[in-house]
Length: 298
Length: 285
Image 1: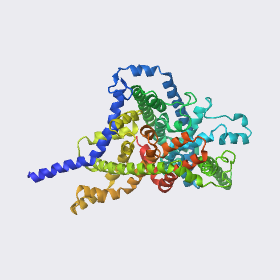
Image 2: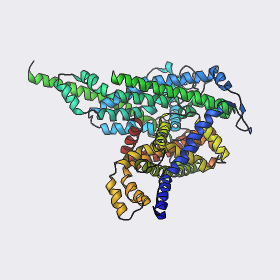
Image 3: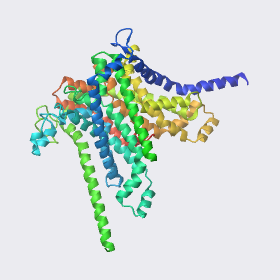
Image 4: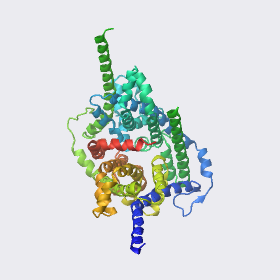
């Protein structure tokens, strides 16, 4: 091989890496390093300022096991998640089925349903905190007009309603995602299958149960995984409405992690919360995937 | 039962089904639009009338609220910051993701599939609390409270989805096109710039819109790193304004309209691409 050839081969290899290198640098710096850092810092006590963190072994993890506020916040996010899984996704599916029947003006509905998801959690939270307002809120005003004045309350500062009120905001903002994905799934079901079922004498319900549902199972589970991941990590909407209050009634994991880090300056403990939370989310996704596979093949 | 009556029944049932579908969709559409219209309407009222005048069309629209919010509410500054951050991150993502996606699609290098798998893993495996480490890292790099410190992590944040959308697209472009360009004297960079990128425009549009949405609406990182008001983007600015002027509802609403108008406009123009981006990120087993 002539030297100029080997030179160009070298340059060729260097060139190949040139294409991938920028992505690799970003990925190592802002994905891999934080991942490593969070995992290791979770074994330390650190205020974010001291030069060297203090190694405390598994102490943070023992502490978080007995941290009632942490588990309360966890349970509250889980509550919102269950509501979202049931109501938000039922609504998304209902709308997708309705639009899928080539409804007149279906295109307009589709544009409108995806408006809330493109708005930020901050904007959505701020507008809804006014709708819910105890004195000036549109909701209370509407109840008054309907003769349901007795139901009026300050929805976001009443411990009895705050969490559910936040959940409603979250579902309002989120159902459009599920709707878009489910509709795309429905539209990918081959029309011939419906025709064949019709020829075999299947009614609308039978066609839904025996044609649509089996083909949609993987997509249902995909939507449910996204719903769990998205809802458990709810944050912006909470910040713009209740900030976790009243008391700790709408506190969720991400607000806890942030408060632990910035409020109490306990970086190591915040990291251990993040690690546990990450594991739980990963496990829940894997379980759902497993169940999906079982249902799909069964 | 005779033929025509059966057909009549079918027609009624179909009509009822359609009416029911419209009822459901219409009701939901109203709840989607009402808060936005309410926001718009309130932004045109005065502090005195905003709680008392509950009409959707205010008697005397206070257009100057927008000027006040823009200047005294600092929403002008927040707005241009958001524009700058969005353009910077989008440019960064398009550049880095398209180079990497091309490499994944066409070039050979060691560790290719491992890196790709790791990239995708970050899309589906959440790392809650990774913002703690990013905060620590940015502090070390002296990038806290800087524009660059806000831009760089977000480029990484949208990189995986970008590569995920672009790679299959590049793989679908016929190799013959590249070969003929090479014969015409194009180098690899030339092929990438003059053949691959222009052909990938539809996929790039999806990347642009998904990244823009993410950056325009970002709040947590902005909360963590910015202490100077002059650097804050809109989402952070809204919270600052709300904290400082708790009762100036019309101005807050004007600020919110300023915040959502660009993104809604982009959405209306590019909604087809959004649908593609959402389903690409989701329909993945």
